[in-house]
Length: 149
Image (cartoon, one colour):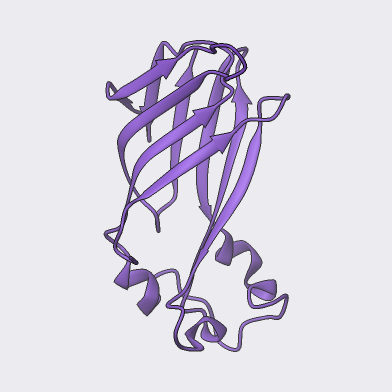
């Protein structure tokens, strides 16, 4: 499954923000103690009056001192470590945003406008859902999605 694409679900809170992270290692060896991992942070924050910005960052670059069970790595972290290289082609196949206030006018990924998205307004007890299909981003890379409402 390590080559399967990801669907990221962004569940906005009442303030319109969300935060989460994804940790991956080979699940077999102790290579994670040497930095053979992918640890991504995802954050959604309001942008402008009704917009939203979703970002992906490398948490290992920021938190290598607490990466392995709260303990510093035994070696230096390399963003292009062997495990990260083994999953470097794994894509995010869709981003699902729950709780967006209004229908977007534009969706951009790394500054490039995307047309492949669907907005479903709130219905009954279910909140609004924005699905960005094939955002063309890799799970191991930093990227930014801008939703302009």
